[in-house]
Length: 371
Length: 258
Image (cartoon, rainbow over all chains, first blue to last red; front, side, top):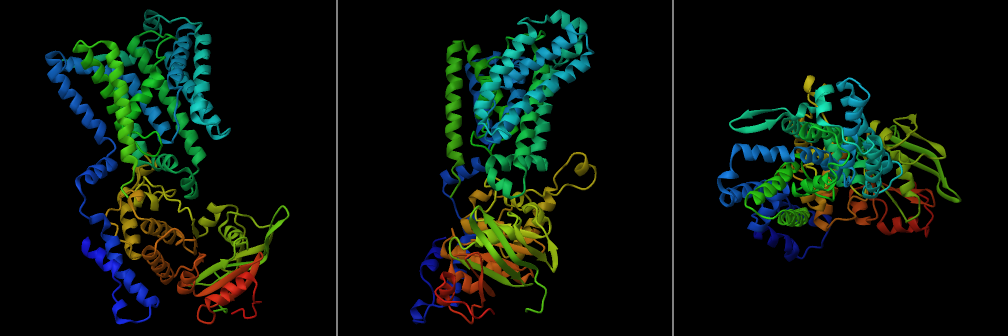
């Protein structure tokens, strides 16, 4: 490397006293060209190597935190923590947030944010429950219409963002309140009892079914969530749509000039996120059995927490779905581990807060492109 | 050269924005296998001319011909589909995506068979292979990893990716808007070499630049734009830079249209 730099600073033909002409210039550039070419091969010092590693592998940091947390709580909380049953319990606890987080990741990746995911989920669950129980629609039809409700809510968000060009934060702050009020209105603020759903529309509770494997209790809902993560991972990494989502979030103008119809991409992202909220509604009915308009009020922010801890950048264009799953698991493991260790709930919240700040700090550091 | 049919030709282009006349009967010809530089003072209408030629602007009057046939570009995508690739000053690369991803952004290749048609699966290996081939042909394979994020590249390398993309997909014409404006001496050098390489592969290049030394070094002919129309066409070997500046600013009336 040093050799090249010296070559670059001493133009070869200077000493001969020839006038500088364009070919001379070219020769200088040619000799220096080598050092530009070598840039990617240069020997890096450790901090930069680590930086480059995290830059290229956005899920590495949350994965390391997850593994460290599991190891730490195995020591602190001992036998009760590291059992298949307890770990499967954590998986069940993060299922809904994990699913919502998948939709949230898509939106955050396009430099947006969706504060309404939880409200869409609850509204969809109310639609599913009422149509099946109160109106006697076939459960499969009720389920489908619940998903359509999610898609419609997503489409409303998407329209406001792409057509009226309002900032996503404001749009979803507004629709959060609107969807939540609609949900209270449509449900008459009343819970649909678990027994009623069980007798009339057991399909809606399907995700709550489980089987036992080596002592771990695994619900169909958890498997569905993992399948959802897999499907969206595939769409992001192996389809043109995924490339376009990344490109739109990364630099919208550049994507536009490259021929991507960014408004369409954004619209599709909001609709897909809406459908995913609908799926999360199905998972939620499976998990709690009943349909209540009052649950899941915190899930808007919890899903953002999972996304951020999972290493997806709030500034768009960078992140991964698998990271979000890991982020949700990190939160679940910390809550569970701290609880088993006998730590007060308020310190669980405190820890999650710290994790968010650390995650965003790391993201800022990683984002600085290795210049 | 004038016996040949121009690859891209414009006659009497007019474009008005309210009371401002950006193009006032502008003519333009680009012949096969040449680098044509377009220079002009700020406000002379050269960017309007280029926009008209790349489909970003629809002229009020006048006609554009490709290989002798009249065309009307509806938008940049339309011009692109006819083989005119434009590298914008802002580069239009996505920083966090890799080099191969960027080369194929907006026109990704899918796997053959059911994987591609039903599962819409990208053919990453093929895109990588073609991207590598393209960069090698242009002598740009100093970039080791074709999946490297574009933001980790230097300015010149990024420009290289953008030019490689236009050369790969532009079947008729490559338009470069101020490609060396943001670059240092060494990197400008590489981009100028790249322009020659693209021309030597048979693609005519339109180069818009403010940098006179660069223009005189790489251009075969120089189109000087002034007051919304073509003031002159000169050749670097018959005119000096000061002649060009004189014509550009109107200090000298151009009498020799080469």
